Length: 356
Image (cartoon, rainbow, N blue to C red; front, side, top):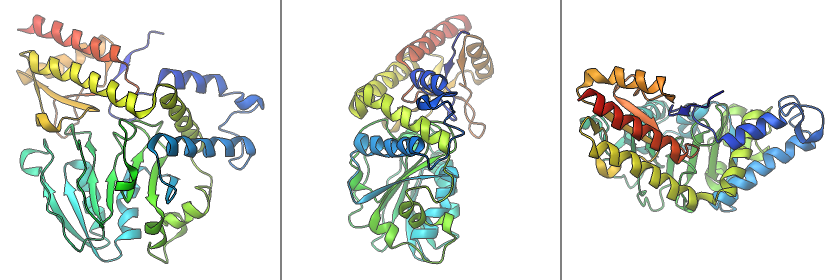
């Protein structure tokens, strides 16, 4: 089978090396004669999987000892409600509205307290990172580090002082080094840069967990996950297994410093093509362009459908923009090889030549 290039925003591309490893081990994991998807999550073989996954995450991100690493189901969308349910407790929180995912987080938080929209880029269809004015009495500040639909990304994060900074990093976690100590909570659905859908990573400062709301149902309390090692019930075992393999792949390939360098190189190749060719125009404000999700338009716009159709025929999959904004989008997450971006640029050059 000829392997195609996967530019889908999520579920997204996984490293080929990881998928081959999973394929090799699928029927006979660790030489035990059973698959990883059918063994007990409390067996010593599986316990080694989840413990290694956590250890690799801690090592790659430099997670301090006073933070818990949790594996939770329900995607980042569950975290939109679970965070204010646990931490807002009728108080006020600051949210920055940078797009569709931030909007959903804001909507959920309003069920549990007062939301102050400290900044918004809605006025320009979420194509830039807005300035924000934060409250002095907020329980926390919430940001979305990378908006997959608009293709915008925080390059640096604001200093919120003693107010915990909570960031949804679903689409750019592990794309660059982070100082985890600057955040109260980092959370991310796995299906863009970590593994398959089914597990969500939550990295949370322990004092926030300890100060969380009482009287919650067990599966909606962070204390349950922390106190039971994310094993209160059966975890999404296969998804966590793949996360472990991805963390090992990142480690083998130089860690997050090397990944950031590669991601910057890939993004530059593609943005240079968009800016240098006459048929294309970037959709995001140049200073806020994402290194993970590259959004652009084809002009005249009547050519966009032809562009994505012909790209698909050439094995360049998933370039159609989100249904809410249209246009085109190339998601170039960690696992996208430079060769895939170069192949896309060659197609863009030929498409322009053929359609001028």
